Image (cartoon, rainbow, N blue to C red):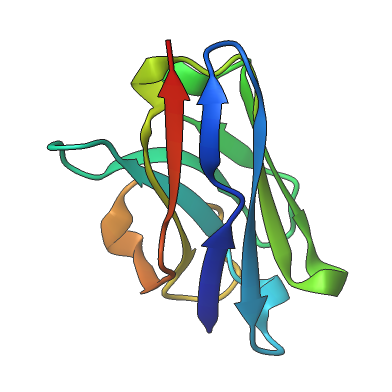
Length: 125
């Protein structure tokens, strides 16, 4: 599985962005996928995850109610809709797929074996 994140950019506080994660591979629909982010000078952190079936999602507390993860398996796409952005959301955002099939979407990055290149999100105050 190969992944590529896109959709990042510069946005003012309170604005919105939608990130996309494009995947290759015929079995992509059987993998849980997560979004992670790495703020400048900080460690990578979990943001959101979605199960392989799409019926289970999880979020870090700081983005609950503002971010929504979804998937469109027919197009091998995962989305992260980000609303009401704040400067604290500034980071490189990466998407990743779990190592094993039929996962539920874990928050621990050690469960993920396939990582894409990130996309930079910058939120100005």
